[in-house]
Image 1 (cartoon, rainbow, N blue to C red):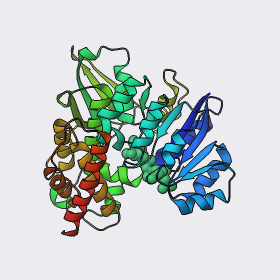
Image 2 (image 1 turned 60 degrees about the vertical axis):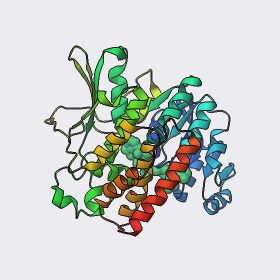
Image 3 (image 1 turned 30 degrees about the vertical axis):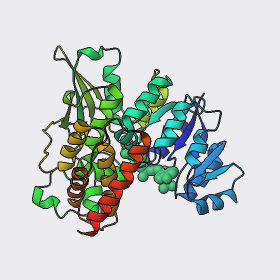
Length: 379
Ligand SMILES: NC(=O)c1ccc[n+]([C@@H]2O[C@H](COP(=O)([O-])OP(=O)(O)OC[C@H]3O[C@@H](n4cnc5c(N)ncnc54)[C@H](OP(=O)(O)O)[C@@H]3O)[C@@H](O)[C@H]2O)c1
C-alpha cells in the first residue's frame, strides 16, 4: 500500500486525490493531512481517514480542531515541516495553492519521499533547487497536472535527444474569445467561468490571464530538462489533447482523454502501473481545433516566457507579483488587466540573481510582493 501525506487536502485537487484513495482503499492510504481554513471538511476527513497527524497553520483553527480529535494537530509557521517529518509515509502530495509548500516539499525530498506535485508555484519559483534535490536523493517526482502528465506519458521509453519540441496545449481560459477592449472590463465571474475545467479560484484566474500556461512552460523546462526554445504552446479549446511531443522524425505523440484531473492524479500514484479508468471514457464526438496563442491580448504568457528565458530569481518574482494581484482581483479590488501591468512593472524593477539559494528566492518573493503592493496602492 502507498501511504500518503496530502498538503491541501480540502482543495480542488486534494479532494480529488481523496476520490482516488476512496476508489483504491487497498492500494492507497492516508497518513497525514494539511489544510488552512476549511475546518468542517478537514474534520470530516480526519474522522474518515484517521491520519497519524494533521497540520493547520492557523493557531485558532488548530486549537478548535484539537478539541474535536485525538490525532496530533501541528500549527504555526513550521507545521508543514513537522507534518512532512513524520514517519510511515512514502509519497508526499503538494496540492496547496501558492508558495507556502516549497520548504515542506524540500523536506519530504530530503527524507527520500516520492513527490506528487500539483502545486505549480514550487517549480516556478524554485525549480532548479527542487530538481537538484530530487536527483541527489534519487526520489521520483510525478506531475499532477494534465499537461505534464501527458508530456511524461509521451516521453516514456523515448530518447530525450530525439525530442524536437514539447507542445503544451492550452484551453485558452474563460476569456479566450474576448477582444482586447472587452478584456479591460471583465468581471470576476466572467474570468471564473472556465468551459472545460472546474478548479480552485486562483488557478482559474491564472487560466483566464494565461499566466497558468506560462507557469506550465517553466515547470516543463525543469521537469523534462528542456530549453525554453524547445517548448511551444498551442490553444486547444476542447482540452482533450493534454499535450504532445514532436520527435526529430516529425512524429507527434499526443495523450488524449476527457478533461478530468482524477486521471493525472491516479496516474501519478499508480505509475508505472495503470489502474482502471477513474473518468468517463472518450467517445470521439467532439471536433478538435487548434489556434496560435495571442501574446498581445494575453501578455501574462509573454512575461512568463521572458521570465523563463532570463531565469534566476525572475520567475519567483513574477509569480509573487501575480499571486498578490490575482487575490486583489478575486476580492474585486482591481481590474483583470491590472494583473499583467503590475506583474510587468515588478519584473522590470527586479535585479535578477542567477543560481539563487532558497533564502535569496524567499527574499526576492518578499520584495516583489511589497513592490506589487506599492504599485497596487497607486492604481
Ligand atoms: N485544480 C486543478 O485542476 C489544478 C490542476 C493543476 C494544478 N493545480 C495546482 O494545484 C494547486 C492547488 O490548486 P487547487 O485548485 O486545488 O486550489 P484550491 O482549491 O484553492 O485548494 C488549495 C488548498 O490549499 C490549502 N491551503 C491554502 N493555504 C494553505 C496553507 N498555508 N497551509 C496549508 N494548506 C493551505 C487550502 O486549504 P483550505 O481549503 O482549508 O483553505 C486547500 O486545501 C495550485 O498550485 C494549482 O495551480 C490545480
